[in-house]
Image (cartoon, rainbow, N blue to C red; front, side, top):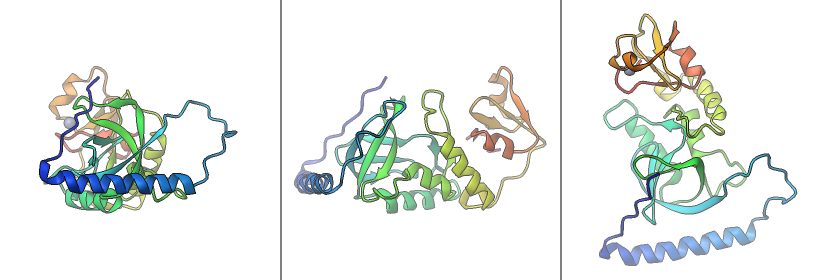
Length: 228
Ligand SMILES: [Zn+2]
């Protein structure tokens, strides 16, 4: 499992960071003092991982951010369009509007790091304690990302699939203009493809679908290569 990479800020940014960090800590402390804590009698079926607090200093795109402390966070369960793809800028701007320069809560996945040393997590805006919908889910609801699952982080992802169904039904964002249809689609456990995609050969026993909506309803993500 990769270690988190922490990049040291430049000397020029040190003073500004120190002030911002102190401010963030003060705000966090104030929020913690003022906010009533959850009832300890609330039963929890599984030991939910605790929330950590941070502040977002940089938004890379619609699914990746960096905190003031230099921790890279990859949003669990979702994939946003990459630079150059349709709606990539919109997804980045929306993510910025949601979290940039804001205090957030981080809930790490069961597997809390990916192969690039990034934290894999659910992100919540700290100023939204009344409506704690994750930013992950919000981007799905708004059609600015699609569900992308991995076997090591499946907890709570059913709600992302439901949210995506809502976005598809409303033809929001990336669902507004579906790509040209293929005669059928083939899928592995978490990805689906056009039948002529080279990746299909590596799937031992692919599932066949008449349309793209069936694998999407199952929470399978469109392949980045063949873009089904
Ligand atoms: Zn493919």
